[in-house]
Length: 488
Image 1 (cartoon, rainbow, N blue to C red):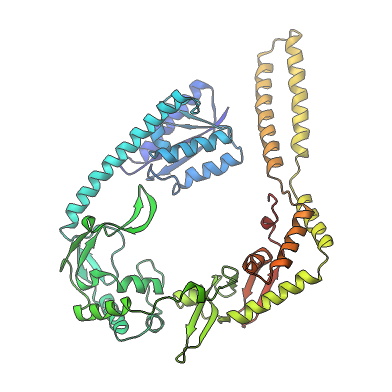
Image 2 (cartoon, rainbow, N blue to C red):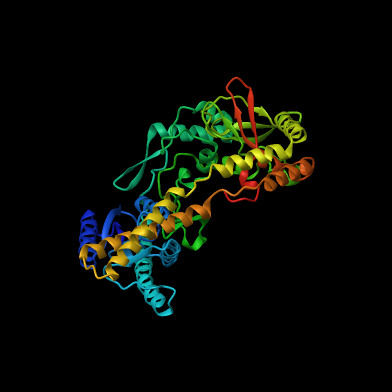
């Protein structure tokens, strides 16, 4: 059996020594059980309640998909996960890949067996119970501390510094914050503000953007109101959507920190924010047909749709580089939405009307399916190994007793199993696009290019649109194969 070791430690009174200890125990176990260790994966200072942010764990899963080993050895269940859902998702994934999961300190059997499942559930449940208990105590302690209006970690709010865990005003930054509030209160737009402060970088090192301004202008801390626990962004290390918590759970202390903006400015900003023109009704909003398809040649960012209204009330819809729109860090040209969409639709109609469906479908299906990986090399090796195994068995049956022969046969059987899995995987995942699939896609597109399904037709045939720095546009038209119903 070829196996890999996985170890992890979090930050709860553990260090890298914990990794060494786990690997030592795993090596001792594998030596005793005659398991061949071929690789090691370890995540340091990573939570047991979230597998998505563990680099090595996910690298191990990727290697498992490639069948690089047939067992994973861990010290105990808690090193794999302290989250019941994550643990059993991991177990199901490994089972589907026919990879064993082994613990050096706990018995892990077939978890589809009711008794084995119950024992595993109890073990991982105890780990999650411990996490929840620690979490509850940590939250209670944090809420108590927050009532003292101290800095509770994370990024320091722009405009402030922290001294002895308390907020103090950062004069240069505070002047910028104050001016931003004043400009907005006086009727200036986000674009006006970003143009003036295009060289300012936030705490994350990125330029200020419209989302940054929106968040800043709503933050009560700038008027001196200390707040904590306002939003629940994560639950057990997983994104929880940034939902607002109930008022009873929010810590709010008026005059709990030094104010940067006056109450007068704050109220003027608040009034304008609350009385901005509402977004137009969805029925009258421009349907941006090319969303996600246009790429800026200058910075690589995707273009986004935007509608502007002039002083006479006329609306113009256009596509603008995402970096230009959000952070003003790109100056590539805007594209008139109506003109570009009309050009794309006309080009698509010509493409669909003039082509020979049979000829191009035959060409595409042949090119894709013939490019698939064949298994001839693996099948040839498998045939050779089957012959060697049979010859070895015949030798043993004839009375030849050589210890090395049995070891060699075991090795050949392991390789046979690997090859069978690899062949099955390749054959199950090879491209399977038929000529009829592609013809049906063309017929569907031709029939629906003038109705409500136009956006779907565009997504099926427009691979990419490049917005060049000189104002020209390149539209790449073809076939999205995953729209043909085949497996690719």
